[in-house]
Length: 134
Image (cartoon, rainbow, N blue to C red; front, side, top):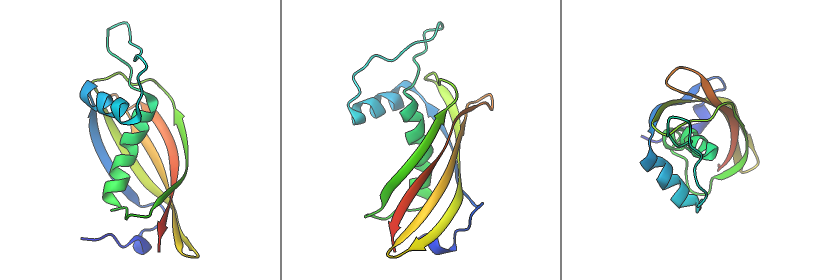
């Protein structure tokens, strides 16, 4: 079933996903972006995930749920990383539509992102602006 982007309204929840940020997922992320730096570790020996790996997870549900078409542009993002996330942590990622408008041949959608750890503490907040061809 195809998503009718014109029917989405501000305040609507776009995505709610839970992910396990395990070492395999972090490794896939660092390989994909060519990050060869060493991950920092906590006193308990758990590696800390790169903050942008958390951001990428938060956007995964948005891309899948909105069925983002080819030709879409990621026009902007604002991210605030509140606390470090160790590997092995379960993350709850929620996305809510803030704006949905059309200008010329483009649909502008602004999505609010929020990520919490297994204890319910916010680890990341932000928003992303995407432009979809109309």
